[in-house]
Image 1 (tube, rainbow, N blue to C red):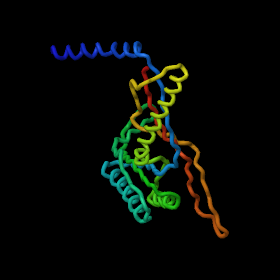
Image 2 (spheres, one colour; image 1 turned 60 degrees about the vertical axis):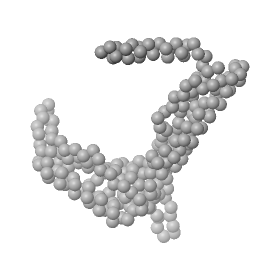
Image 3 (tube, helix red, strand yellow; image 1 turned 135 degrees about the vertical axis):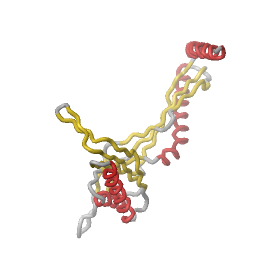
Image 4 (spheres, one colour; image 1 turned 90 degrees about the vertical axis):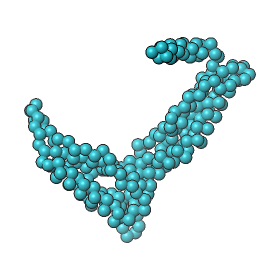
Length: 233
């Protein structure tokens, strides 16, 4: 108990120390920023399945059958690169509300599926055909920058953001006639921030004989990194 009180007392003393540090130490506080605009390299089809039945086993059986039909259709399409990911599996009581009264009517099984691919155009259309051919399924298509690409740019973005912060601090120091500055504290975001533009073009190529299928041309996305640096002088 004595040790606990000692640690608690030390923590309480640390708060005013940090506050006093910011008040007594002369600081130049700046934000460093970096940005890269690149084309998305990954497409994700989000599919939400739902099946109702009076028995749990029947609902689950139909749901599993739909998932297997999609897996078989994707395999048959011979797509170059894709992953079929199943998650958020749940079975709940199918509760119906009418005029303020609820009653249970069997069960509802739900399953989320994701088809993730780095392929484009023709393979994307094959995935669409596979989803449509697998049964009554709706989907959302999203384009994003893959996690691997974001990680590969992490060091470059951080370096650029730190240099940007240093450049801003040096400009402030020179303008105010401060000769030398040095880093006092650095804070940074845990990972790059990705911003997607809403625009997505549908391109269609054609020949003299017949029009070709539409080609998806997603707009560029922006990866940003911010750091916060305090300089003292």
